[in-house]
Length: 358
Ligand code: IPM
Ligand code: MG
Image (cartoon, rainbow, N blue to C red; front, top):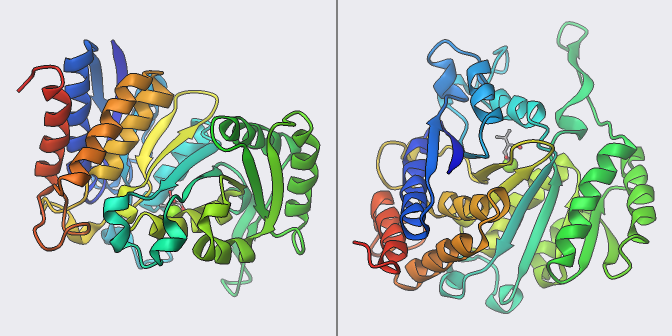
């Protein structure tokens, strides 16, 4: 029996989460597990009920879970008002901070059947397979002071990193590299930023503990270019919060759609799994959103969160088969798109079928 906190969030969140839960249920059926889901509010969905974007009750539910499955955050109802005191996105940031989720893992791979969807030339992306290890609870996102000054004519954000913060995320990157092609690229702006120079010093020192892992360095502007020109040169990209946010969206073009990219956030307590895409409010309630990134996040939940690798493999294999058979939403297959729920049914059905289910 495993306890899973389910946070659908905003926009398409509830629809894509429903499909991931369907898939988890087929895994439970096949492998004889029980998943106990507790649903909780976050983001605009919580604010619309008059609650904080990350309510205490949700935090408690998360703390008691073995893993968290999260949909998306962002609600246009609260957008375009730069003076608003509270925004749905703060719920996500508060959750990351309060749960100590300092390491965000964003794997990027390409699916041969979907290669034509990438705007990049095929010879550049064949075989690309990289992992962005993004620091998630420090840097400009959280540094103090952060405020408006001088009657709103001046704004301040602060980028701050301690040795401890750098060490713990670098350790994750080195360890992940050992499970892959054993190469870490530290992406920074050490030619300009003091924080980046500290990252380089700390990570360089740590590299001697991982002699089997190759370490190199790249400035973030060049990394943005190399990701497009030669993504195959990367294995693990280790980087700070804001650079990781930007580069992981950029890297998604390798797979052809941001609707395919899952992520895991890990830290001292319970891990969280979420698609990297947003809440796509224009698509909400229409049964058209691509659920695959969330289903692949559920696979990461099984592998990393619950230590169930065979179950995770089964979900990933079912997704690959679903792609091969072209049961895909419009972003991936505009000629004959399937609905969100049809994609989820198909993936879940493949897993159940392996066990003689319906
Ligand atoms: C992400 C998102 C968030 C971030 C937003 C919604 C606050 O873009 O998870 O990448 O910037 O971290
Ligand atoms: Mg982002």
